[in-house]
Length: 351
Ligand SMILES: Nc1ncnc2c1ncn2[C@@H]1O[C@H](COP(=O)(O)OP(=O)(O)OP(=O)(O)O)[C@@H](O)[C@H]1O
Ligand SMILES: O=P(O)(O)O[C@H]1[C@H](O)[C@@H](O)[C@H](OP(=O)(O)O)[C@@H](OP(=O)(O)O)[C@H]1O
Ligand SMILES: [Mg+2]
Ligand SMILES: [Mg+2]
Image 1 (cartoon, helix red, strand yellow):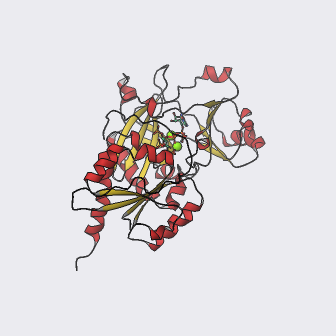
Image 2: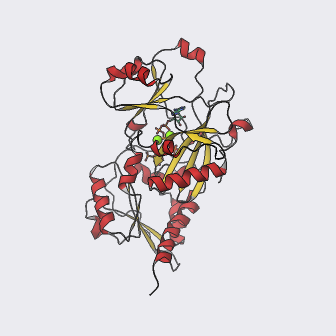
Image 3: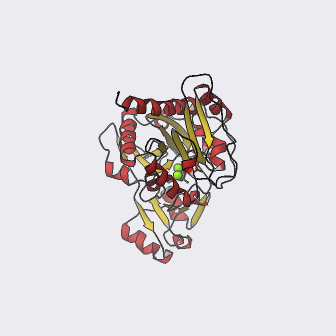
């Protein structure tokens, strides 16, 4: 588990993949090993992930990145050892699934059906809930939540029927990498929720600040790259007090909190807030989720329940998150890519 400084990166617009072809092809550096990674990423993801320092380290280790041309059949490109992908286009899912089935020798990161499980905020947390991790160096659960598919007028009734406690965080049901899917609202009463546009997930807000700090609570962002776990601390929303709840009505859109600029790793924090979740708990959670989800590249957002030391809630899981801001991502990622191929060779029977 590493807790180094963050790598500053600018943000770009959210869009699909641009029309560029092979702009990041690199010849293989002077090492014996060759590894060809095809990538199909949004322009934003390319900018944040394929940074010059990473590409040059990869090149020195014999890893070559090739942009996949979406205007040509995938099977005519490569050959690739690994395909890395995160795109907004709907047509892509069928293309990559078909390719994966016809080319089992290529490691596709990650399988499209597994990613789709994380692209829906209802199914995303299901495996954590099913795991029922309690009494294992702590407890991990998920907040109670309700899905509203259509008819916002039924929300007040549904919220009361489900016994959900206010305030509620309203999140778009589907997560597709677009800015809209990250538009979140905090609702102080159930009636105002009818103003929002379904499909939505209404999630109980978990208070997670120990003292009434002005800056807000702390969120643990747990980055997973294969077997490697890296945890960083980010600032989160402040608690909602009962006094505030009684006084305020309405739904309020909140800005992107807990983004890379909200790093709390260098902040002077009360040790009871800053203490990371126990390592054995994280290892167990990640091992189980990797197995159940069938995914190698994701992160988990976790908060510690107010007043507890070891009760945690997972509130979000993201596929292929902003690794460009993960400390030491260059080394972690290149080692991971190389390990995939080494493992493949190890598994091959000798003739
Ligand atoms: N149930 C909750 N209880 C307390 N705080 C929450 C809850 N849900 C979300 N938050 C706060 O809102 C932030 C954004 O929520 P969430 O992570 O679900 O959104 P997102 O758009 O999927 O974010 P990401 O950029 O990580 O994909 C969290 O980092 C946390 O600070
Ligand atoms: O790096 P932080 O601040 O933690 O936030 C990330 C989000 O969690 C990811 O969801 C973003 O990836 P997508 O835009 O592909 O969903 C990711 O986008 P990026 O990789 O393009 O920076 C980031 O916005
Ligand atoms: Mg999040
Ligand atoms: Mg998310």
